[in-house]
Image (cartoon, rainbow, N blue to C red; front, side, top):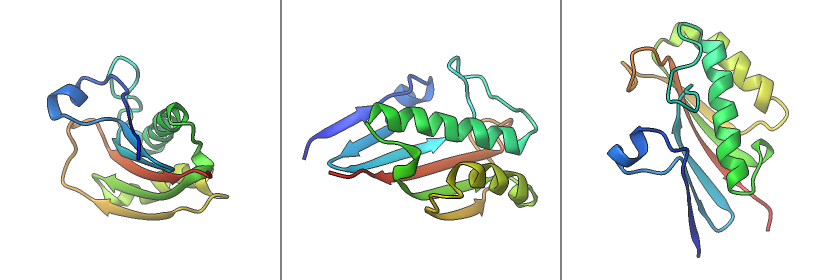
Length: 129
């Protein structure tokens, strides 16, 4: 199967050695995505809802580069630095995925790569042949 690597051109990709997303056949794997803008600056500092919205927008952008949409997402994994933010994070996730209903999980982690990041999300999408 053909492999397509999709870059977001963040400063971390070449350092760590990963792609924002990888498409193999009809499946797209989106790496852990954070609330950063095109300059790599954190968006929504202190606001888990806004960060989650930005993350999903970033995931959507990567999926489009792989000829997919949010409606193709079958799995998300949500990492939060404070589980008490679950309602805000869950509400933003539900705004985009409430009618899609991917399998998901939310896990609290001690920290992310930047102290201003409160949320990170991974996604898997499967597109129709």
